[in-house]
Image (cartoon, rainbow, N blue to C red; front, side, top):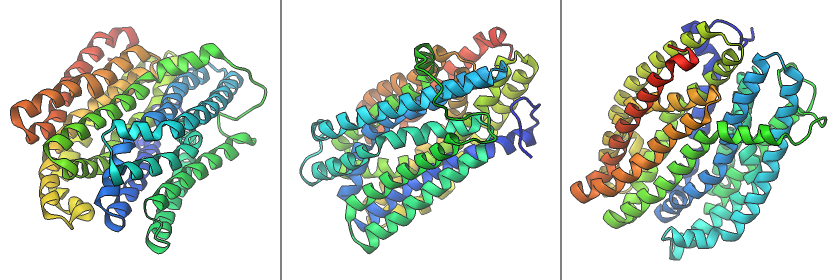
Length: 444
């Protein structure tokens, strides 16, 4: 039975509704990890480090799709809550068409500047060639990557989270199969990894377009009877700015981490950080998946001015974030060794460094879920400014300060502890914003 946005959500019903979104984000993270796993084990340490060096640039561009999905879903959810179904379909179509055009433009620019960008990231020699190769292949698929990311949110708003999960699963399995085929069987190396990822992104986006382009039983449908709603597109950017800011800042921070690690630990440091990022994507995906899955409910109830249900959603969500954080900390600490061995078991020094860094990094999961949900909560309430402020402080300001200052005092260990310091500060700031705005939005 399809769960509707207008219903009252118990813990059981809420988890049932958000579970496909959580699974979708986890699987998206897993099939991103598979690229690194195949490259690290079958191509080599330098190509693996090259992927991790150029990946922040790819995330910055791809985050435009996350912004469109999160910001657009907030507007669509509110519009649907106001019983404006036809208007929502027109807004939705405008968002998709504008995003596709944006992806094409940025893809062409990214292809042209990939080499100077890689040089600016301190890539040289073999690593430079690998960065340029991997980055340029993925620029061809950038419009589809952006659309695939946005559709993850749009499927939830359309009350079709399970279908969104299915599309993600199909795209992910495609990537995994092609990785095995192109890297291991055909031995195409890093080029094979890039092609596998690009094809999976194209496939995932096309499946979603085919569904929404035809008549369906969801709340959303692509239509040609629309126009450029400039104000709506501006609001999409404003509402979704926290997701854009978060990913943009996180990508810049990854570059800064790589820069510091190259200074203190060389290529081993970059590779160790890459392993941590790959695995942490999977754990963080639970927080992001829950936030993505619950956001349309919050937007709908906000549009309907149902304060009782807003209070219900806020209370249950904070409880779920706390429980999930505790479970994750224990899980990461106890599995750090086996997880690291899968990636870099062939190098003892790199293995030891990564396990130690992993166990330090685990502490962040106790704090980050609250801040991730807090930022997404304000996005769902159509307050992009506070959402962006939380995201910017959490993923950029606090981390820049920590990553620059901590190594001066503690050396390499300071780099690993920097994220814990930053997440602690973000936790406090998020709590303050939620406390200040509780009467304005009536959620507590």
